[in-house]
Image (cartoon, rainbow, N blue to C red; front, side, top):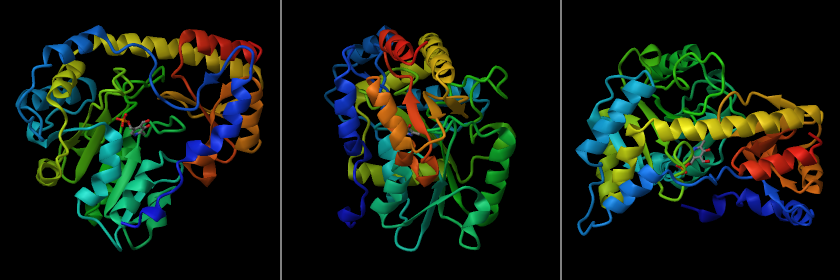
Length: 368
Ligand SMILES: Cc1ncc(COP(=O)(O)O)c(C=O)c1O
């Protein structure tokens, strides 16, 4: 793998804006990254402590109890009954899985990995690590006669919070099945859907019966507990779907030592079984979102999409770096939209992952 082929880590380019923002007398409000700041729920800390005695190697595939619990979560929360527990795999956070999936599937030179035009950068990185051909696209037609071997979807999308409806997902699955394309859907903000009238309990999953007709062949849903459960520090995530694909991945991951630690496996099981802590965290983010969105709109910003997830995709109708500088003058750090592809050049991504106090400070500085 030519390591030089990997892009620079984009946050390095924010150093100057960060220095400006830090000089604000009220201190920095860092809304440039989506790292949770609220405490890990006690029930999950307890699950971790209770599993502290772990002398033996854990199972790469995850314990049967974990896999059953994830399968139930898909049935209860995602309208996806029938997820085979054999088709569940715990992962060391989902970024790891996104970055390595093309390699673990054996993709390489000449294989296309598709992903959205405005996207979380790791889909591109994963294709490059495998030596495959990363191809962002606004729609499936753009792929022409050469279909990707692997197609990434991201719903709700990072950075813009767009939710893909059931009808869209169903079309993608149909298209992919006709061409033997594996579809991996990164759904890590699914429990944080702000629409008043969502077409389901949470953002629709690729494994939703209405999307895939009950067959999970060629499909993987990728989910993270970092956001909904404040577990980013634990690296707790999972993939689920086609048992044959999962079994292939388990085979390689065993050789590569890609194992979720046993105490974290127990935490994953606890997290997907308890809905209360998720509802509490969701309410915190909803309040922050209302406050910040109102302040931005009152200050003349337009918010696009952002119907789910942890970000406001905001624009002043001018280049994103100029908007980053405007916010830095207020002591607020945001991520420029060009981090996520050229089509994001007029937007900034403003995260909701700050304390109530910091969100209130940002709102006040915007004039609200
Ligand atoms: C779309 C998307 N996928 C995956 C991840 C990675 O999450 P984690 O590695 O914490 O599970 C993130 C994190 O921000 C994300 O936004």
